[in-house]
Length: 340
Image 1 (cartoon, rainbow, N blue to C red):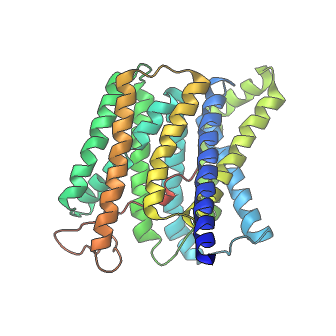
Image 2 (cartoon, rainbow, N blue to C red; image 1 turned 90 degrees about the vertical axis):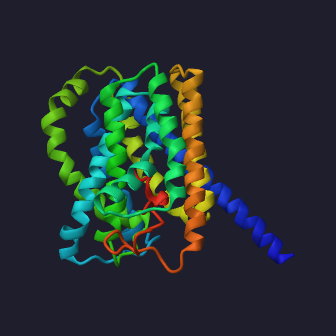
């Protein structure tokens, strides 16, 4: 009886973790799109910088003030030699995501973001000469096919937004691959990752944001009619961005890798549906089919990775130390790809 209750509580806890993760993720995406489209605040660098500042403050409060998470100590030398390069890629990743969100619909942006597994595998194959099981390559076919179908049938296609989203996938893949070598020996969770990387990302982005968008932001502050409510929404999006990182930490410890993979793909579908209900962007039938194929491909890819990981003895190694000709498992950490 006691075991049954514990099992039920575990299922409920996992479900609640997934739901709050969905909620924060969809809220951040919709709020960012609302800021760019409805508030006419067309400054993605500034929005990203606000997110980094809020995340840095939030991580400091969680670790230093509330002490909800222990601080992972990093040597000062490693902060610049390891953390700073990761922060640079992390910064590019978030900025490109916000830039793409300004120019293309949420549905299209989220579908392109699902291309990340393919870019990660290809990068490891090209740069690190890592070899994969044929099942990994086959699992990428529906992902690529779905992306192509969605791109061809997208009514609001914008080449700049499309390229930003695509390069965002490359930045996510690069961040994941670099983490395996640069952060070797440090077991970072999402909160400690933000604690160390957000201040560096703010420092990197602050000057470009002021130079490229400073005049536009000042003009917007002087001409926008509902200034205070709009500023509340903009800064609230930064708070929600930090809450998303905290929710990732919670859901990682409440679900299995397979559950997380399936829930992550369903999250994309929820984000597409909610954004369509709010912004009313037209989604042709073939476009929806392409999105569905992509999500099914991502789920199949995660399933294949799980099967291969169960077959491999020991723990996966970094791209610098391949096992041999048939390196089976790609370095894709699906649990940390949603950090904002």
